[in-house]
Length: 404
Image 1 (cartoon, rainbow, N blue to C red):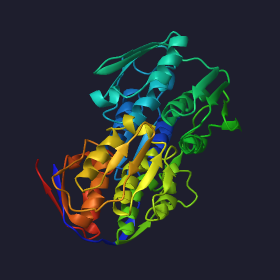
Image 2 (image 1 turned 135 degrees about the horizontal axis):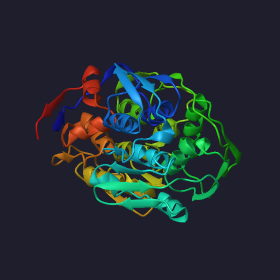
Image 3 (image 1 turned 90 degrees about the horizontal axis):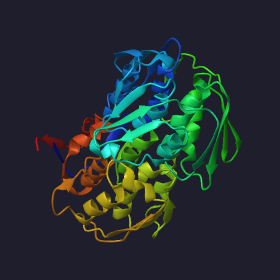
């Protein structure tokens, strides 16, 4: 699909999309509970569908009514033999469910796109090798077999927090206590805290013993809940960015006390336009594309802590560098930093490429509201925000969708 966006400014009130990060966690917590939970604020995004598919595969039952999902939890120690968990393109779903499949020693498979299955999994690979757990990664699926053990886990703190969250889902269900020791530096701490907050809603207690040590008491159980997903700072950032470019959009439904790391967009946006600010995004890598986009308009910026952008849905730093050159903006990509140089920003010289990445598509769309532009592969926005272009139209932007 090609999205053509005409130059313009938006105005109106918009409810923030539900937090994808929190929704994953609440859905899985409900799926591990004994009884029925009701989770409100679930979008129809591809990532949510992936997590619901996997919950169904392990034996949970669910019914959807609008944005509300009623879930009857699975008997987690009696997952159907040879279950296949379809993760689509959701990295969170894949990394969260891998440890969940290792509670009773059976054999399971997880499938997903080739890009998803090529993303790093070495943290799990190292753990499973030590515990003699079968872990086979092929282009079309991952095969698991064996039983995860409680104990002490030493994990580098500068890897994706998704691995830590995956373990936090399952270690409380073990008979014995466990400890996760994070080797500094610890990045994405906010996402770990988001997991702890979500699991506490189900009665699961996880304690920071110090800044790098998590204590997980064993023999706990998940209790069913009724909960509502809070607004998503990650996706709200794209609409807040439009305000930085002259629109007047009031975003409602964001929790000012949220633990979401991407809440920092408010602070980071304010830094742009003041020379060449240096902004560290190691704790909020998903903000990278929209920060680069705004920097292209507002005089540049230096971004550090960008190393993990290589292993997202696309190589996000390189993808944004490629697209920004079409607007006349020079970008250099280094191992752990990105520099967006001050330049004469102009209308794109050719059609923009979404790189099969929702955050690249939405960042290019924000820029196109200034100059006009066409984005090929715009359907990738459905991964996290299926109604993104509809939202733009409701705010007054002219959007024309074409078949590619």
